Image 1 (cartoon, rainbow, N blue to C red):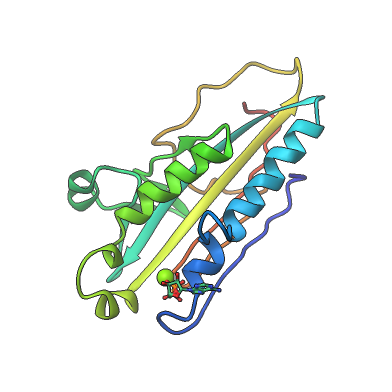
Image 2 (cartoon, protein in one colour):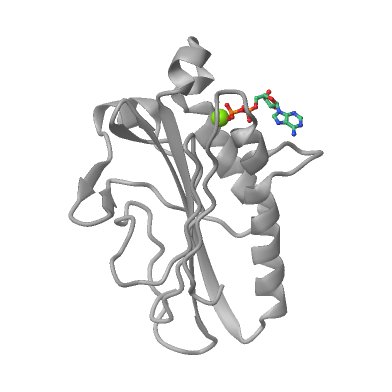
Length: 181
Ligand SMILES: Nc1ncnc2c1ncn2[C@@H]1O[C@H](COP(=O)(O)OP(=O)(O)O)[C@@H](O)[C@H]1O
Ligand SMILES: [Mg+2]
């Protein structure tokens, strides 16, 4: 929330519990929903600032990057490209305003993973996914609001951010950019 980069990365054999550790289920939430709960609690406590949270979710499968939040037909025909240093395009970003909306984004992405279909074991070792949260904030009343960013490039050089990833992978990225909301 203060602009530091952070990455959570899980690594291990198939069925070792990486996805469960990060996502969990309704009874036992994983690191991502727990972290998101803390993020929303922090925002509620910090009434002097305004925040914009955006999520993206991608899968690297056989060296190709797929946007898990895009309709599968679009993701299959328009793989995400790495443009320059660390910028991903086209990559959808969904604005989230509640834990419920984060869950919806995670569930949609998980349904689109290659490991969601057949040959689970075979596919799992080749599948790495990244869940990213971008956090932007500004003091209330400061600057002009900025349009929210679906299809905006992914990682913007020079902007503080937090990232979390697993091999299989999820990534949480928080970015604080006081010029944007
Ligand atoms: N701590 C846990 N408690 C209950 N079930 C778990 C736990 N860790 C993993 N599982 C279950 O084990 C299975 C494999 O875990 P998963 O997270 O998918 O492994 P990985 O992502 O490492 O391949 C899943 O069905 C998951 O729900
Ligand atoms: Mg997994």
